[in-house]
Length: 59
Image (cartoon, rainbow, N blue to C red; front, side):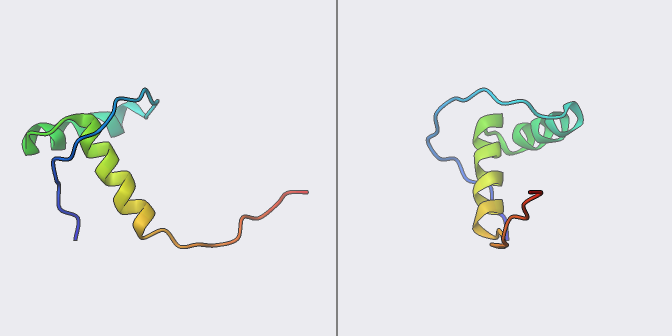
């Protein structure tokens, strides 16, 4: 289960779709953490459960 934590992070600039940012900002506000902290936690959660499949080549 995904549990929102409050770890120490560094700042990075990224581009995300507007609707995704709005959803993430709402969650971050509700959980009283920064948007960056939430994004890091979402990425860590996704990478932890990432299925390691071969990358198909178009060559």
